[in-house]
Length: 259
Image 1 (cartoon, rainbow, N blue to C red):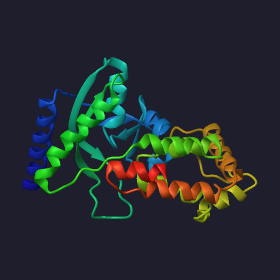
Image 2: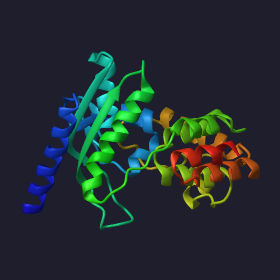
Image 3: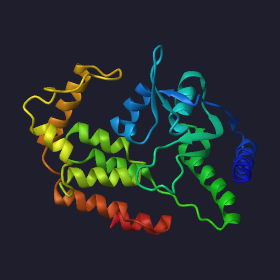
Image 4: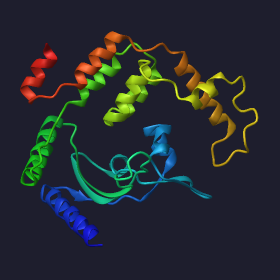
């Protein structure tokens, strides 16, 4: 209890800093509609989120992060420029590392300012540098737009590009997808069996949950389409690896990219 109290106190302190920077504190429901998050994150989110079913509201998901709910709130009711801050519990299943918490406090600061995005980025980065410096931590930055442009230029299917863009801010998941699309990792046994079956639904157990046969069939069709797509070329994979490997100060990183 003492440790949790200290965490909550630190979260409140950080949120206070963001409020002093002009952010409006916001709250989002802990239970989120699963359909919306599945559309944005893809089916892979099921492996990392806690999903439950509600007779009236359908599938619900314990909030895996604040970003999507806050963006949805802003798109529905917000006006630009806008600043928000939040602090609260998020929930992530952990199936590989028992030391990682499956429930923890997330604190955030969001600026919506399309008229001057560079200024907003610089302000947020400077603020986080000031917060982290006394803790002996160093802030790092990067331009996700460069990686997004690289993904957009890949000679592969639109579905694969969409999946890569969806996970571009999750380094481990993004790299796993690159390895899979490049043919560097074997096809999981369960997926291989599914793809090899003449009728994957034959002999299936009674359906549970809200997903019907049509949705399941569409998912299987998408898996077949992905399997039919050729692997990424070695040249493209090497370029992506080189881009992901850039670790330098901003000026030197820019020179490296130009080279």
